[in-house]
Length: 280
Image (tube, rainbow, N blue to C red; front, top):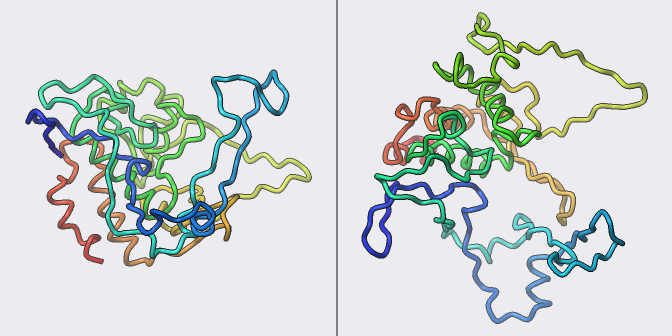
């Protein structure tokens, strides 16, 4: 993407594309009394902040007493939501001829070239867009490593998308040999170098939420659980809707084109708009 600042200078399109930066206009609430607004959007759920070395109510002026969970918009009457999306947060944009060496992109949306080569560009946007589209459509992160570090995200990518191209696989990713063997298996899938053994603890039952695509080895596997919005504090609890097999095939194709490892091989933004998924 390209856009221009107020002085007319051309900037390249890195605009921190993540679901948190895609907003939807709300209408019809202006001028309402507070109690009426809360009837519509729900009573705020507070989460108190406690310092390790203090009583339940801390006395530190630099920290709030509590945080508030976001509004559960899936529980709000859709008449208050418009169909006008907004893209915000242009703080990471940069001049086309002067790309930075790195970007402050959250881990789940970092492209492999950002992680391994510290190379930022328009194609980094396209990778982040693929991760964002998956999350918007499913309510889940495509690459949601438990350990928020680069090796964990690369591990997630390899499990779903297959081996990284050279020289990333053999040279650049220094921790790869600790996680994967050099050669793929007969199906072309990366082979783990870590011997894992299922541990059974007496009296403990292992429970996996049905939204978790455990053992997924492709984008289709990741889409199979459908759309889930797990909630521990919403009015109606978890929300689930299946994704039709026909859409899974088309959407997996779209994501695969956005998540090509080699940046130059990713689908362009212009061609993206012509993809069949947007006509379903």
